[in-house]
Length: 84
Image (cartoon, rainbow, N blue to C red):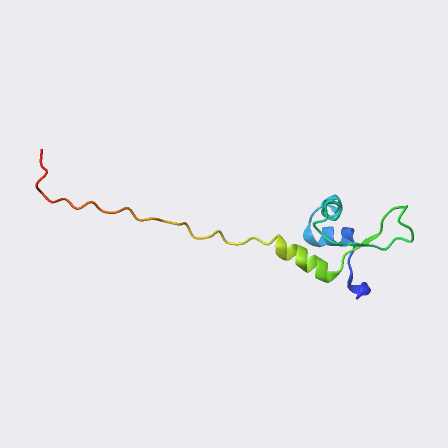
């Protein structure tokens, strides 16, 4: 499973965005990633698993807006006797 994981740079290239955007998603907790660095004190080496990427992309997918709640106006029926 680890061999299918992707890096923030590779993901950014696939999506056509800057790597800093992907790193921002990771920092904010929007995109789950695993730090594969030998120690946590140094520079992180992020790996993104396919399941986490799929979950993230599904959460950001555009959904069609709900249909408008159109209320019909009642038609006033004239009785014909109220003429001015």
